[in-house]
Length: 256
Image (cartoon, rainbow, N blue to C red; front, side):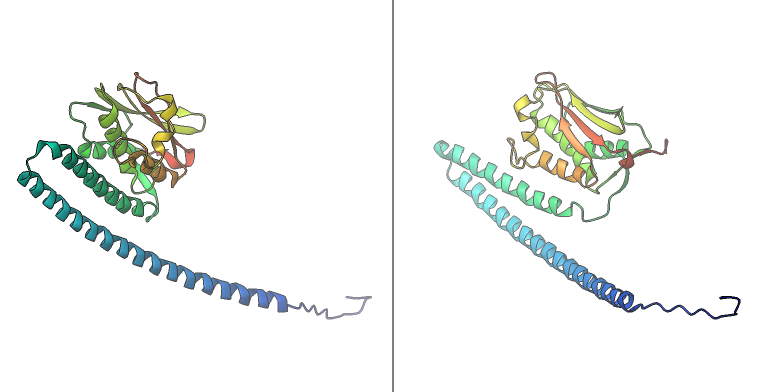
């Protein structure tokens, strides 16, 4: 009713801009899809290329090591023994670096998922060079970590690092504590420990006596889901690595 008179009110809205925007969005969605498909294709090709390259390099490395062994047998000159040893060490380092590229290529290749931390330590210990070192796995069963698929290598690298450089080490222990809103997974040992000036350097690529890639890889794997790691031990009292996990990446579902 307008002024007491029955009336029909018609409202008209110009949707031209809205339609143009919708078409632009549709166009950009198609562009993103095409870009995504192209990127996936490029990644597959690069992965295939790197895989073939690694395979070929490993083959040539095997040939090199074979000829080197023949030379050592045919030239039993003690004055050359040191040179043969250095060549062997260099070849082994090359092999380790090739293996590293394969592992590094896999970081973030799959979506992270929940994994039982006690089981991860148990699995990693099967391959770790522990020898007579006692492993204490005090991580509670049914406690899970939201992490990259390669998280098991983190625990392996910590054990391997301790066994290689721990010196007087006899024990490695895994436990978990709570600090503010974060859970902290602790890996400590009774070995020689790490000097203060090296506590951050050990996570740099290339630092160390072996390949210098283990702890660098460890930090990279953890970073995928916002997990951090630092070394807080005391020299000559043992190493202590703290893996600090955000609340959203840690859960306890109880004993399985």
